[in-house]
Image (cartoon, rainbow, N blue to C red; front, side, top):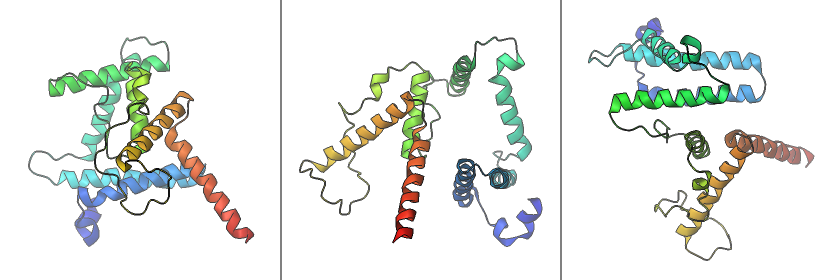
Length: 229
């Protein structure tokens, strides 16, 4: 990586921002290998993910403003975090099972955030809103459930979120049969999708993976239809 950064014109000009799409792309390719149960491909794709970590750390190491870090700093950071958040392994805390491990993890994480910010931590702190909407809804609900938030707060269908004015695609939506306010319809659809995420979680399924599985089923049906023509 050091040689590429100094001897390859393409690698030399990359920044954190320019590399960001590759971090996401390589992660999705690793996920696809998992879904296909292709362990050889998984090994290769994990290497590509690791390359992104190494690349970002190498770029960061070049900064001289006090914000730089190296791959060793990254490794030390995650090792320290794992030790702090596993006191049942590295200290004398006793746990009854995996559920209590998760609870302890969240409690320790909240305390760490509060110590840094000085403000009361929220169960939703650190949830990245840049992730796909379905995954975002699932993560918000999981965090809230572990924090003891009442489950009925996830029922947005009876009181959908207000119209933000941003409905995404402004093109032709086709004949939906809905002659009411489009903003209200948009809110209702979002609320119904959010409720479906809650149903999937309650059934013990990951909604993101469930939708991806449905997408693969649909793909197979389309391919079969095309081949039968």
